[in-house]
Image 1 (cartoon, helix red, strand yellow):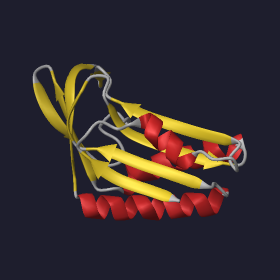
Image 2 (image 1 turned 60 degrees about the vertical axis):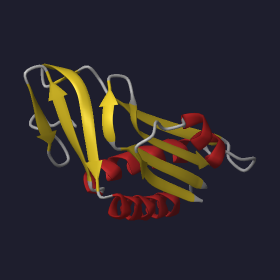
Image 3 (image 1 turned 90 degrees about the vertical axis):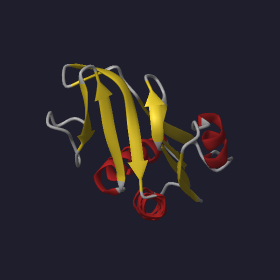
Length: 144
């Protein structure tokens, strides 16, 4: 099972965990990407995400298929928010179920890294004194 979606509403993490867990899974690994208050030495006020939803979801499904195949994971859910997000909001969730913890952890990390690398979702950081679109794999500092 692969669930991949882009949405404006807050992400229900418990629902995603419930969707991937099962009696065949000995492990569920979850990654939450949240809006932090500082980046590049600046006070962050909020983030704004934009996406090409159909293309983003297609790419996320492709990532899910590769991760399940490569790590022997059982199920995966990949969800990213768009729109205005405030400090502390959850921007992205990756939940992976696998028979064993190593596969769940590895699959979760690989999926998140692939999302950042190739999914057409764009992030604008609004900070004290301005705003900036964060480009590519990483911003000017090498962090994204």
